[in-house]
Length: 381
Image 1 (cartoon, rainbow, N blue to C red):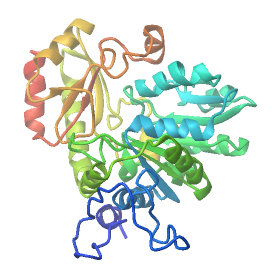
Image 2: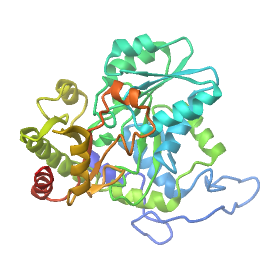
Image 3: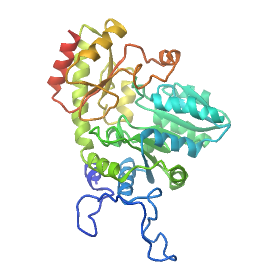
Image 4: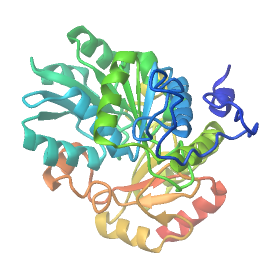
């Protein structure tokens, strides 16, 4: 079946008791067993280990990404943490994209580094740079593509070929494009990570995360960490995310079309000095964007003439666009990464990887495109 059909129906069966077309919210701590000998015969014993509502979402996301299985978490960062704990021990080394979400950078440099795990933040858009970063003790490569917030791309097939030859798991944060536009496992990756908070939810209603694996063995490793640490997704969040998934493709198509129109408007505006969107001909990696993904997504960034002061002024006065930390929702959001999402990244590191002080990140929602452009035009003056 096609993606749009599967995003609605995968993992979901009518409730056997009532016939409810929606998966019920199993708001329960424990599950009564038929007998000691038949313990776990129904598959559930305690909701830290498994819950039927959450399981329906896990099955759906595994199917959409083409994975063997999926485990869901309380936040996107809980998913990244489970990935790290499953793959990394004291004395191990991990390579991460030099442009990555600030929370990932913070977890690596401020938490895991305390326990003797080493990290290299490499330019993963350059496969040779990835190869040069690998060590004998490298146990994980985590790439984020498109990267947050610069949208720099990684050639997933090339990096996966490199890591597979060395027996190193390659994990990909696929939050920005989702499996509707990009499927890393089909390009050779071993693990996919999502903040389900973003496009899977799509309505600014929940926070959550997911790890989808290419093999059952990898899922077992990650799921053991999930059970041991209790970093589970709640059934109510899973229920809401299940509903959000049903309109994923429709939302992304509309949001992406608006993003392209907005990027083209900004590129032609005299007060905008730079625009970055993978669908523009001016995008530095346009060929790769077209070859490994079927769409360009709804994220873009730009800089205003006058630098930081002008960018802040625009974000402080703009109508319709909400100044907020999130992305992927039906509401259009505008963000200043240096102050908000990437504030924990040191200034020198931000500048090294191209996260400039005047960078304005935009997450395009479902409002009328003309209204969003009008709001930008008014704010730009």
